[in-house]
Image (tube, rainbow, N blue to C red; front, top):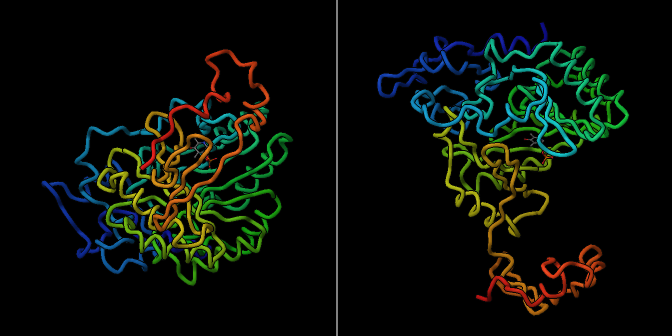
Length: 383
Ligand SMILES: *Cc1c(COP(=O)(O)O)cnc(C)c1O
């Protein structure tokens, strides 16, 4: 058995293995009741990072009775099941698909958007479903980007992962392969030289990792990221904003800055989804907006992800920016406010210089947008 497999075996895989000082009940509900709906997995490496069960690492993985006291929220908040043409594929955007290749993860995050299927017997992804997924991409020439996800694709053994990657790479119209993975932050021992040898054969291959707190950046996770980067894989990070974990500008600034030092570029900061069993992690959207304001301009643009809300019911990701920066756009002037609160005016180019709307100027129907008339349209109003 490889080291990473042993760490999984030696971890907490049943609620009965939870140490007594981590136990909790609420309204007569215990962690054993949670386990019946949402499985438990805290591998021995991630477990070693938990100093306090109520702390930012512990909260992410220790089952909370709260999870089964919520019956009203949707199990599939993003409407993924209805955007799924074949079982393993979610095809929502024009040119890219999600490919769910496994339902196993190195840890079972309590806030998971896909907790309806992760780690459950019903959620298992079969080899024939994976083959069907590859076939779907092969027969859909508009798909130029695939995101392997799950579950965690790096939970698959090297040869099975290579079977998937090589099958995908034979598809001429598929330009980019991405892997979404929690492995480097939660089971970095899985990143072996052999794995890197497999991955580097399938470039252009990108990875989006999943770190939520600076305490997840350890010598082990740093080494894993450096090995992946040395294999030529551009690394991004998708972070979920969560109450009691990282809903603090100082914590996130430290996380994003430290990620850059291990060659990981923060990509998305997600507003937590309205997932059944995970709502106790949600923060008000205003918290995220405030945090973005506290980052923008105060640290490198390289360290700043896009803050997005994945719109309920399948609307996809919508970027949310603090409304402060664009003060007004009228009479040819764009009025801007910078991160320090100072106001500046940028004299705009004429709308007729726009290659799309400008070229059609005068040819659009009277109701056409983007013509010169817009210049005198209603601006956002001066302060
Ligand atoms: C997030 C997501 C993608 C990828 O989105 P990007 O903005 O390109 O990273 C693709 N498909 C689905 C269904 C997604 O949720």
